[in-house]
Amino acid sequence: MLRSVFYRNGGSPPSKENTMTSTLFITGATSGFGEACARRFAAAGWSLVLTGRREERLSALCAELSKQTEVHGLVLDVRDRKAMEEAIAQLPPSFSKLRGLINNAGLALGVDPAPKCDLDDWDTMVDTNIKGLMYSTRLLLPRLIAHGRGAGIVNLGSIAGNYPYPGSHVYGASKAFVKQFSLNLRCDLQGTGVRVTNIEPGLCESEFSLVRFAGDQARYDATYAGAEPIQPEDIADTIFWVLNTPAHVNINSLELMPVSQTWAGFAIERNAKS
Image (cartoon, rainbow, N blue to C red; front, side, top):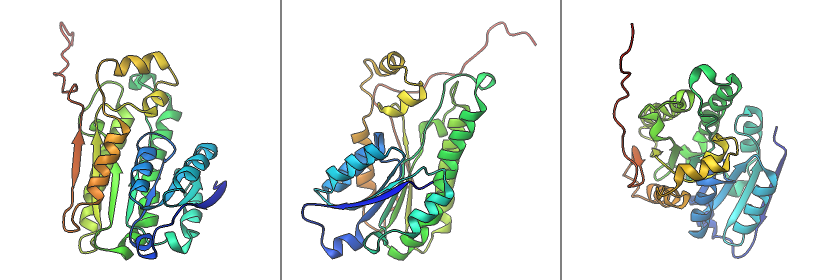
């Protein structure tokens, strides 16, 4: 359910023109890529609609960023279709015409092989990574189309949607959905001026991995030790560039890895018995 909505406006608000043409909706804004994007776009004066499940974090972020721009916070879970419908229908007029949507809310749960996985984890990944993205996209499309030329949707995919690896199962499959959904949206939005991009990060250091490892800090630290992984700010800078390219340019997909990461060879079972 939608627990609360709060609006804060501090400092010198953007001009009416800027508010109308540069409003951005970000899901999952309380950590990782979402939080980094909120900070990056706020610094450039974009008005923001931010969603998150953790009210304390979201409130603190909105209070901070409201010193730079206009911010509207929504405490909700993107898996809750009714809450999403209610929140979007009740957006204040100054936030109603969107220039951009960043579908960031998503997660991976567990690294066990498929036979050992918890079905509840699979449900959560499908409901968040697929259904949540579907809800926000469909509900906000009319507003993005109303903006027209220069508007854009950025979906957070993953290299897991391109390359299989052990323990990826439903997570990787959900990101493959994001990839194909993004391409299909491009077809359906032809003529509207709305652009669609799928961002596909590789090894990135963020709270995302701590959630996947069920809070195992040692495993988290070992994952990134000596690897110089991508940081959320790197992704935020990339997305900022994507949404600010000339209106006639669409970045269909963009795959990013740290220099330290590359592809492994095929797995081969030796002495296998039929």
